[in-house]
Amino acid sequence: MKTQMVLNTDFTRGTISKHIYGHFAEHLGRCIYEGIWVGEDSPIPNTEGYRNDVLEALKQIRIPVLRWPGGCFADEYHWKDGVGPRENRKRMVNTHWGGVVENNHFGTHEFLRLCELLDCEPYICGNVGSGTVQEMQEWVEYMTFDGESPMADWRRKNGRDKPWKVKYFGVGNENWGCGGNMRPEYYADLYRQFQTYVRNFGENKVYKIAGGANDFNYNWTEILMREAGRHMHGLSLHYYTVPGVWEQKGSATDFETDEWFTTMRKALVMDELVTKHSTIMDKYDPEKRVGLVVDEWGTWFDPEPGTNPGFLYQQNTLRDALVAGVTLNIFNNHCDRVHMANIAQTVNVLQAMLLTEGGSMIKTPSYHVFELYKEHQGAELLELHIQEQTSYSFDGVSLPQVSTSASKGTDGRTRITLCNIHPEQEAQVELELRGLKGTQGKVSGRIVTAEKMQAHNTFAEPDCVRAADFSDAKLSDGMLHTVLPPMSVVLLTLE
Ligand code: AHR
Image (cartoon, helix red, strand yellow):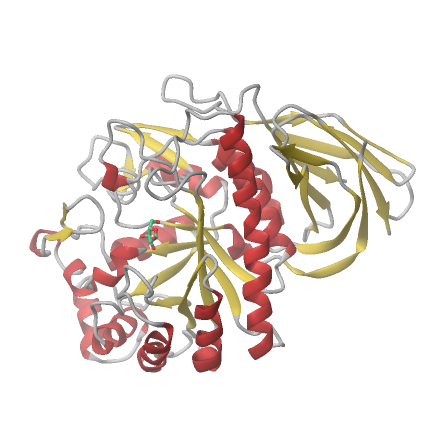
């Protein structure tokens, strides 16, 4: 049996925001310190204190937006401790993540400079849980005000004359949990209050993001939209793919087919979540003005044995690549409502793009998927209809075997990304292309796959899983035929 689809290459369904390909870097474990920031005096090659290898790798996937400083850390972070001469900055305890000392050497200036070096937009998450309205108000003033004021003058004194452009600002994080254990009614009121003082200075227009729901908490979305919807530009959603339970999530590398299946099943739940939270948002915002911002997503496994459990360091296999591929397809297909998404987290934490060990760095299978998908950024989503679909069944439960999305880029090229989640069977796909001028044309392909589902990159073997050319796709008479190997993520580009 084949999977049969129809792609209308001349019928677009909206723009895929480049911010769907966003990232998240928290003061957690070895993400910021070691992973990104090593300081100017480090023997690890760096630019102004940022690792060169990491900067280079992140530029290659064209990261569009970076969320910082947390996560749970955000609601304990006091930004004033992280500006001014580094030797004078306060040392604090990172109570959430391993109880380690946070020396505040990476603060507002360092983060915003990182975004400049990466040419990406900053997305700052402010402190509602343990912070004050004044503190949040002054942070925005410090970063973005051009005139004379106590905060703008302090910024100048600390070495930055011109204000930065900071468009994306989150008003708290997980305020139903680590951000204050609040009820939605209470947080909705606090959100309304705090956001009032998140000011637009000069040209800087802030896109305000309210702390949203965790996975299936539809009531949170309902209350937030009802009570505060008109005061926000975005509402967040967090969802992690955990094959087991929180107490025993499962190993990142030591798993078999049953956990592969559960992981795929749970990753696909993102479609249901986005659909249902969007439906609630539609009720209050039928014009879809408010964006759904999935600012934490990805796999969460047990920490790598022998590492600090509070550091959330995990390896990344071909399974993670498939989770990334299917999730990004879901976001593309919901681009009318999903304005941004941020995979957790950039380096050395959870479903990371990059792993580091001293002066060495490796790219994970997930990184290679982001590399494959990067041309979807800012492209026009194309209407793609699945007429017949093969299934992947396990223990009496069936999942659609192939996940896909398609777009037309600013260069006029049509791109289709396809994931075959079946661990043993290839997927034969027949795609009818409608709206193509003439029947000529060329198709080229790239693929991320491996022989084993546990395949991953190590510092000894950094290229076990990487992107390669893929030639098993043929175009003739307006039909595209391809055979996707088991466990593969494929990009097809029509010239
Ligand atoms: O990404 C790790 C943590 O997961 C974040 O700090 C928090 O927001 C979420 O619970």
